[in-house]
Length: 141
Image 1 (spheres, rainbow, N blue to C red):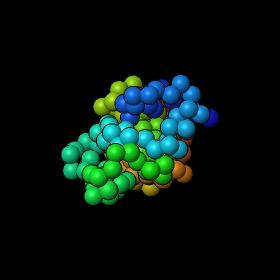
Image 2 (cartoon, rainbow, N blue to C red):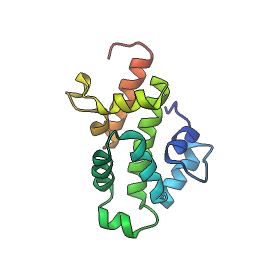
Image 3 (cartoon, rainbow, N blue to C red):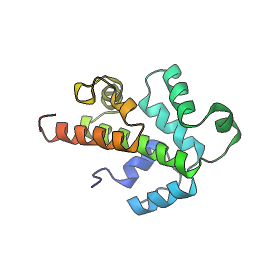
Image 4 (cartoon, rainbow, N blue to C red):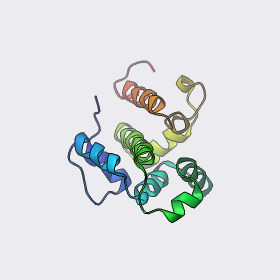
């Protein structure tokens, strides 16, 4: 169950067309999001310009990013996942700065890896979201 709304996820990506349901967000992802959605998501989660560049080009190679207008469905899914994890962290921590700090700090429940690093895969993102909700509800993480 997703407790962060499609609108909250879209806000991280600064989408022009705001989906009002997860189903609509899924349709947008399947069609391919604009590459600006990736840039906006990366800008939200990263702390330094070097980290931004590294993450952006890890998701889409630099030459490909520069020549394309839209992302592929696979790249769009990675972008949505990044935005969803950030939106969840922002909801839990109550601020963008605290969410960013959480995502970039190693965590013992993630074997010392950062939540951002772990969330680069779908199953990893689920682990990070579960950790966030456990923290939110005061369940031993």
